[in-house]
Length: 187
Image (cartoon, rainbow, N blue to C red; front, side):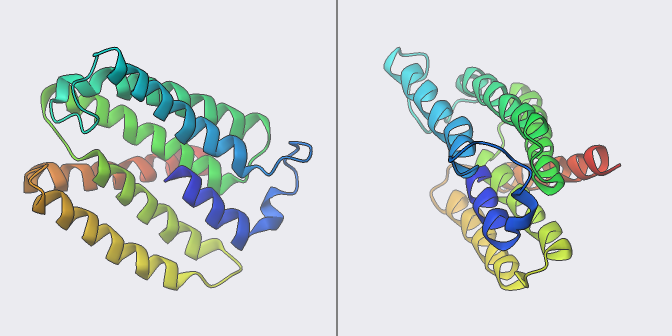
């Protein structure tokens, strides 16, 4: 989700990214590496080493180590955003994502929740905030994201990966995390 939001922000408000210096590398590349490639490799290694039984991780206890690894990589990404002067909206989104991950980690110790819903609802709120500050009209993206969020929730229930409570919990955690990001970074 972080990569998709970065792509959306980069291509709709590219002037926000002028101060970032990665040489000839597009700023989307390190975001993709730190928030998708590295966590994916780490989780695949956990599977190969039998720390987790299944990549879907239906057992909340098996989500603990992958969540810690993901939090570390996302913290690394947030620090990169600060040091390379990424746009404020990106820092708000990344801090909100970190807050969501941390809250998910704590809740996961006691109860299962839908991490898919955490991610998709966080992206939904980020796009909502982006529609308010973007020079480009991306309201259609927000409307599409509402539909996608509903489809993800429906899919998680349809495949019986989660209960309604777990889906709603994930949804609320994603929203709450982004609100935390907005309060702490924007203030």
